[in-house]
Image 1 (cartoon, rainbow, N blue to C red):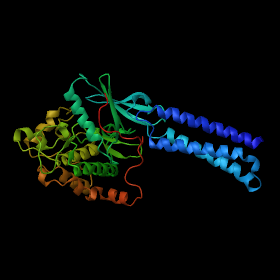
Image 2 (image 1 turned 90 degrees about the horizontal axis):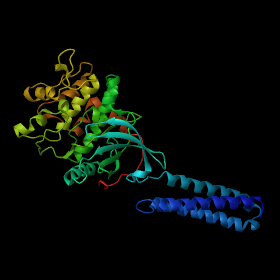
Image 3 (image 1 turned 30 degrees about the horizontal axis):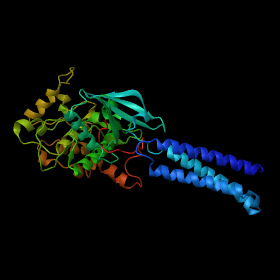
Length: 395
C-alpha cells in the first residue's frame, strides 16, 4: 500500500473511532438516541464506507481519479468532523442534572437562589433557580410549583425568558432557565436612572412580552424592574412567573398579589371592594416600571419624607388605595413619555389601553417600526439554545 492508501487507512480508523464514540455516548442518554444523533451517525457511517471503498480500489485509479481521490477523502473527513461537532453541541438533556456544573450564586430572592451553570458536554450556560421544598411529600406545594412551571413551558417569545427544564432532588427544586448576563433592570439602575432612549427601548420590549401574555389571557401580576432581565445586547425579557394567572379583560379575580409599590389600585382593594381586577392591572405596573427606570426609585417615592428611606410596603399601598393620586410623572421625560404614563396610570382600569394598543403609542412606535424593518425579529439568538422540556417536576 502506498503513502496515499496509508493516509486513507488512518482517516478510516479515526472516523471509525468517532462513530464508536458517538454510539456509546448517545446510547447512554435519557430517552434513547434522538433523530439528530441518528442522522449524525449515519453520515459518519457513510463517510467511513466511502473511505474504505476508495482505499480498496486505489490501485485502479488513474488520471483524474488520482486527483479526485484526495479531494473526496478531504470532503468526507470534513463532513464527518462537522457532524461530530454538531452532535456534541446538539441540545443536551437539561433535566439530566449530572450534565450541568453549578457555579457561583448570581442572585437571591424570597424563595431561593439563582446560580450560573455550565454544561459539561458543550460548555453552554444557563441559570438554575433553586428552591428549597420544606416538605418534599407535600403534594399541594408540588402541585402549585408544577402549575407555575407548566405556565413557563408554554411560552416561546423573544421578550420572555425561556424555560428549559426542572427536577426535584433531595428536597431542592431546580429550575433551568435562559441565562441573561446583565441581570435585572433593578440591578442596572444601581448605576443611575436610564436615559429616555433606553427607557423607550426597554418599555417597547416589555410591552411586546405583555401583549403576548395578554393575548393568551395570562396576567403576569408582578411587573417591576426586578422581574425584567437584560441580555448582553440590551434584549429585554420578562421573568418570574410565580404569580402569573389565567384571566381576561372581562373576568375578575380577587387576590392582592404583587409587589406593593407597583400594584394597581384595584388590586390593592380587590378583596375589600369585591370588584376584582383583570389583565389591565399589568398596564398600571408597566407605568410604575417606566417611572422606576426614569428615576432609579420605586413609584410613590416622592411622598417619602426628605432624607428618609421609604421602603415600607404599606406606604405605597395606602396612597394608592385611599386617594385619587397617581405616582408622580418624572419631569425629565418627553411629552410622549408623559402621555404614555398618563395612559398607563389611569385609576379607572377600564379607561386604560391594552398592551396591544400601547404598542402603537408614539413613545414606542419607532422601536416597533425598526423591528419590522429588519429581516431578523426583535431579539438576538438565545444565550443557551437548549431544548425546552414539558413542565413536569421530575422527582
